[in-house]
Length: 303
DNA sequence: CGTCAGGCTTCCC
DNA sequence: GGGAAGCCTGAC
Image (cartoon, rainbow, N blue to C red; front, side, top):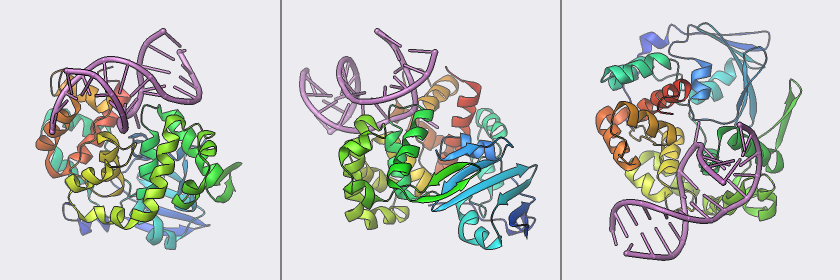
């Protein structure tokens, strides 16, 4: 893991208060909820009518509204900042430094300006493993639907918020014990057997998985790909989104399109694209991937 | 060893 | 009937 130094002077501009059962964070920089939730890293956040987002993190339902550079978390206090928010939203990382580090040409500069508020969330390894296995040959609305289905079927009921019931992401125990048919009923399709198998393996190998944070990304890649249902792309996503391996560059269809349009010729394959990008953007190329993915999707580049 | 075509659940166009 | 945030298998 490599990260630029945290700029404590900048962090100190942030002001955290609690009022009327709401957690309020003022003067947050390099932060935009839409950029964060639409850049392809998470599946459990949905937009409310008032522009706020509601999602499930661990066993909590979180609702957050952005007003300029201020964030308002509903039903939360300062204690929740230290136990959940700070880590999940990566609040102690200085994204200005990251942007400087990867900003090597005009193309990535444009992508960074476009998705200026992107942050890489710190998500749970197990949830990310299964979520990205489900993403294989699937569309985003369907991925979200399947994850919702398995959470409702095998997760714990948390609460009702604004008229909707919320459930935690199911444990590996639950999924490994479940009859295959019940997973299939969640519309996981041909991924159902892989999910059940991965759950069983996770139970016996979770210490190995939790240790991948502290190994090289090549080691993590090699290990994760021994799971049925985890190939190059999914493994890279797991490493980037839950294991702080920022020197990865997951290549999906959108990233392939934007790279083949703006950087390399059309017959460059995914592995070559990944190597090219890792070489170009360096140890923080995972962040570059996020800006480029969001840029490509929102602008429809290469489509 | 490496590369590549075809099939795969389900849903939406 | 084609294709989607890909992966697996078998054929060369």
